[in-house]
Length: 397
Image (tube, rainbow, N blue to C red):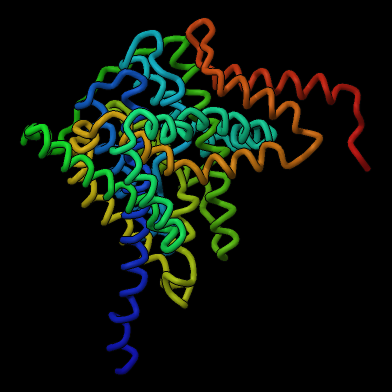
């Protein structure tokens, strides 16, 4: 009888851990999602639709996988993927072509579940080159807070100060608190200018787009999005869960994330994947001392994401009303850790450093050739340099 009475109390910890997982994941990077979607041609309404669609898919995916397998599996949107979009810019064919690229990427994720050799092929891309491409893509976004500080010090400085202080005191909440600082800045600006938010923009709404395909959207959007999602999210996600004592059911996980990505695509959602950083919150010892009960955190995270989906239009409206430079500052600080990790992994092996540097520089250049974005050319350049440098070399004994 005492054990039965204690059971509901014991579930409080994983329930709270799941809610924290979703709150931190959403508030830390939703600005990056909106920035990326707007950069490739989405209107404000289409970007808000994409955020809503991807949030709902993440929530449902968390609930399905955690409930079915009794493992604290968490799903997240591809933050490196939207960073890639922000660096890519407009493509030939406009927003419909971008949506077509999202669908192709979703199809490739599904193929990794149905045809394991495809996943093995992605795993053969040297991690140094994949991470160097990601670092080059992230660089302009990570520089944005400092550019904004010069252009609008009164708007951006509070965001950076709050982020820095919170990073020292409560690191997990540093970016969400920086976003709260941005909300205060927006509120002060609206009070000063007398601008009112349109109530209609606060209501969540999906806007569907008929997809089209172009060479630029397939080679410049779909392929790089697939590569960074697999190499920077799914593979680390499996490793994090393994370190915590859990084995991810790979094929079901890829089926859920691939189908979820496909469902969200026509509404503007880019890609979903296994959680990596968020996995440590929901699946770690803090969620529950008993690993067998931590799966509740995955379900709780999914439920909170569904709630946040209902509020996504309001978050998008805040971004739209913010002074220039404020939201890019939030997006930038949200990506500092990812940038640092990518740089470290890119140059960690001295033998791989030169190809990684070339990859990084091409990605950071933002060049587009024949309608294909810099991310693809960065991968190609890095692999070519690596092949030439390693040609004829024998592996070290």
